[in-house]
Structure formats: structure tokens, C-alpha cells
Length: 341
Ligand SMILES: *Cc1c(COP(=O)(O)O)cnc(C)c1O
Image 1: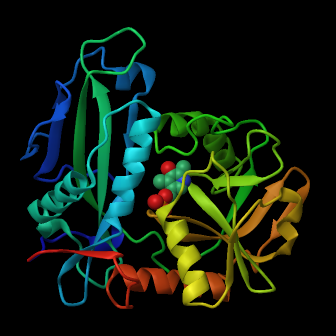
Image 2: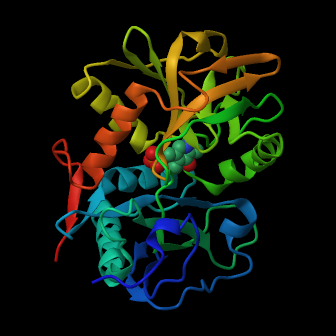
Image 3: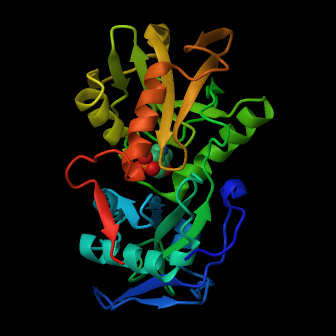
């Protein structure tokens, strides 16, 4: 059973669904956690998450299969990454089992909002961990909230994969060399808004961030990871502690090597070396892959395959991964977690 919604035209918009999960950390431990219909958070005005950015989040999706069942894609990886984020910001970790249980509860409770198979739409889940409580001094909070809410979202590419143009950010970094770039925190997003707004105003899909130490190497494409395909058949993606380790990226690295027979490698990607790529893409849970048609850097322009058409390797990678996510293609061991009927 699903309710009636315009599944094909959902976009990426907040929706107040019937139920979400919330757990409270106090006195050194998590409470049992529960589903609630209340979509407002009731927190102290002094909460460290609000003032000092002590928070982290995740993003993952639930997929409806052809058989009508619902499944998650590598939720254990999101749990592990939120734990890493928590350590970096001195927050308590949410155990993997608790994380996956919370996600499953929210999917089940909002089952009617998991879009039908074939629409390309999915149920997007947003786990959020925030420091709360009556603390105004700069130190880690003593209380935390962990919440998971959900909303149906549309397929990013309705009319098939289409390339976008990006511009290299020469005025702003999103992260510091030993900062929080590798943690999924709101602060990185706040730091990148100005570059993003400027890039969009100039007609680009988003800005590309360089390594904050030398400004010679590609790091992130907006809030997505970069990869390029060489004419020698290599899948290359940058390696740096200030890049957010994308689960989509690591999945593509694996599929590139084991399913497409490419040589997959994480290594430095110099801006001056961009010419070696015959195809390029940005990857993340939201869009899976956004083909990169063009990158501008001052007076220099780099074109990858075509500005209007997706390249063959990027297309195959996309189809393989999306096929796995919707249960049409056999998944590597442990990648799929089913929601019980
Ligand atoms: C979440 C995120 C990504 C993509 O990660 P996925 O696990 O593939 O969704 C990439 N870059 C940044 C900055 C992110 O926050």
C-alpha cells in the first residue's frame, strides 16, 4: 500500500511525515528511543549545536523493489560514519545496532510514503545528532538528541542522466587542512554556502573545492565526491583527509574494479591534470552520480566527454549501482539490508 502522491515530481523537499524516531542521551547513556508524531525539536536556546556547531548528520535512502519489498543500501556504513563524526566533535557515538534499528523503525512507520518501484523516487532518511542542554560555555554538551526523520524524494534525473558544469572555487575553502572536512557536519555546509551561491549565480551547478593546503588538488564537487575516468580505463578519485568519505564513492570504486574491470584508484587529482579524464562525475546519495560535462577554472575550461550527453562508463556505473539499490542487480555481500514485512 502506498498513498497517492505525484511520485514523479517530488524533488528534494522536506515533508512532515506521520512519525520520526528520537532518542535522548543523558547521564552518560542513551534512553530507549521512540517514535513520535511531533516534528518539532524542543531544546534549550543555549544548546551547543545551535551556537558552536556541535552536531553531525547522515543521509541514506530506502528503496522499493519490483517485488514491493523495501530495502536499505549499506546503512552500517552510515552508522560507522556518524560514529566517526561523533568522535571528531566530542559527541557520544550512536551504536550501529541502535542506528539501524532507528532507521528501520522510521521506514516501517512511514511505509506508505516509500515511493512505488519504477518511479525512481525513494524514501530519504536524515539521521541527526545534536548537542543540547543549558550550556553556554564552550565545551562538549552533556545531553544529546539523536533523531531520524524521513521524506519521499524524487529521482534526481527525471529525463535520464544529464551533465552539469562546475566552477573551481578560488575564493573559498569548505574545510581546513586538519579541520572537520572529513566529518559530516553542518559547519562544512555553512562554510560552503557563499561559494555555492556565487557559482549558481554565475550559471554553474555548484563550486568545486580544492585541497585547503596547496589549492592544487580537487577535493569535493559541491557536497559530492569527484571521480574521473581516464582513456586507459582507470577510475580515479581523490584521497585527502578533508574530503567527506562518500559511501557512494567507495561503492563505485568497488564496482568499477569488480564489475566493470577498470583499474580503480584513490590518489591526488591535480587541477592541471584534469585533461587526462575522458569522463568525470560527482557522486553522493542524493543524485547517485551527476555527470560532469565541464569544469571552468578562471580562463581554463575542461570538457569531459560532452557538455550535453553522459559518457558510456559513467552511465554503466550509474546503472550498476542504481540496479543494486533497487534490487535489480545482484549486490555484493552485505550491501543490502531488507526491511521485514
Ligand atoms: C554526504 C556527503 C557526500 C556524499 O556521501 P554519500 O555517503 O555518498 O551520500 C559527499 N560530500 C559531502 C561533503 C557530504 O556531506
